[in-house]
Amino acid sequence: TQLLEQSPQFLSIQEGENLTVYCNSSSVFSSLQWYRQEPGEGPVLLVTVVTGGEVKKLKRLTFQFGDARKDSSLHITAAQPGDTGLYLCAGVRPLNYGGSQGNLIFGKGTKLSVKP
Amino acid sequence: NAGVTQTPKFRILKIGQSMTLQCTQDMNHNYMYWYRQDPGMGLKLIYYSVGAGITDKGEVPNGYNVSRSTTEDFPLRLELAAPSQTSVYFCASSRPRRRRSVPDTQYFGPGTRLTVL
Image (cartoon, rainbow over all chains, first blue to last red; front, side, top):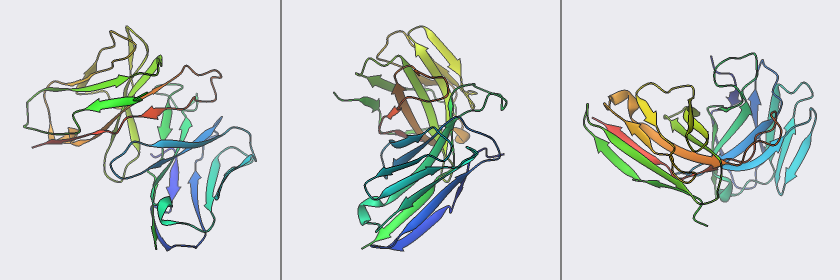
């Protein structure tokens, strides 16, 4: 069972379009992180959201943490080819989930391709 | 700072061979991690360490071993390579978490692409 479900799995859009990707769970998370991974490289942290309902902006990227802290979204405005990559959400494993407590668990990611 | 470095970048192993994946960080981070990333899957934690001399299992530790003799180095050992271990392996490091509920930034290396035939 995947604790963090990301959708869509793949997204191919034209430069200038807007898009939203989602990270959903049936469990409550104390915080969620978003990473971007480019081909052949390791993931790079974009943002950490901590408070339910929190909205953070990073230039053209807007991150939102759901009120119930079970979901998060990433909205990109006027996408550019440089936004191409794999977007991963990650959360600290909930205490009632078992396993390695306190470590990050990752969703499968959304693979974004922005064509010029 | 070089950050997190991993060697080798690519490796092909035969079934039953062994190898060590090297990971070094120069940020003086206490915490270090090994993940594997299979196609279409997120990252799965193999092992982690909260400091020199201390290691613990992650989600998928079977078939792997680690050691942490220094703050800088965290090698991952495959003893008897199997095709199921074909994957991309990432090492990461971070500072200790200041709040249990909020992870600190993990800094990832560029990865080692391993194929077992």
